[in-house]
Length: 328
Ligand code: LMR
Image 1: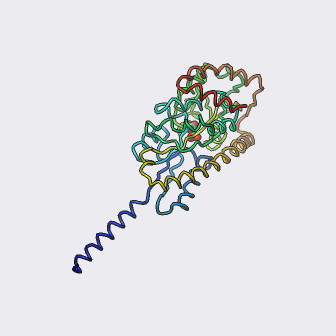
Image 2: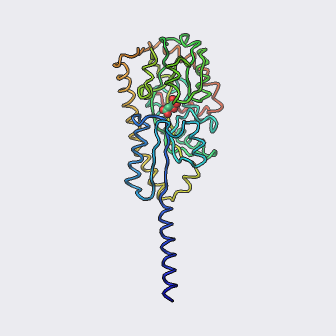
Image 3: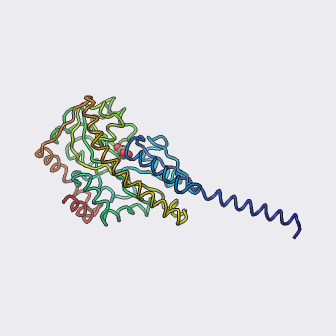
């Protein structure tokens, strides 16, 4: 073989090799809407840290917190277009893709965060993770935030107190129906707009977790909070089926193991935040936090209960029954 031919082959081989090596670094852009101090924010950063330790040179993660890149409505489209590869929106925001995840919005279905965890770990909960796969969205894990609380610029002690009030809700038909049962006026709105809408009076109230209420400073612009624990804010960590299927099997396996580890920490952070953030808000003295009597709580639950029947066919009675079993 002539020297020229050998050199040409070597150059070709080097080029092919370096192209393959370059193609091996998969980039995961992970977009979310909360601050980095929330359980979700911390978990996203921890995911990046573990991936960079264990999949160095194969996978790189870029995190975009705090609606910096997209809000939750936009992020689902971006994920399907391949502009981002991961997100962790609230399960309340998938109505266009699956009605089944509406189960997480049913008022007073879950007694507390451990009932939610029991359900997400149950066979029914695990099967539900795949509910949006036919739309190209792969559920990788459930991430907890916590139980939601109500607020307004007046005490909300009984359902009648909410009548006529404008409440911001996530984009969920179930949540819309929930507020209609108490004759309130629900308004779907992006998370990033809530603080301004509350401070300018565009809306009167909202529902969210202690963690989001603290990190987004809602307690500074609402005079009264009710510890209602009436619903849950639960996330689903997602990717697109297209991106996931494009990854080599060994990378999928390592990512799944990392996600399992991160999910366990995320749950712990969420449980801690729920208590710490509530105490922080009470201690701030900027607002009043009302605790309901059992009788008052039962009244809210009773008035809101018809929402279950309304969405039972969409969600599946067997799923609701499985969730109820977790309250025992
Ligand atoms: C919301 O819109 O209130 C929540 O989904 C925010 C969050 O925790 O992602």
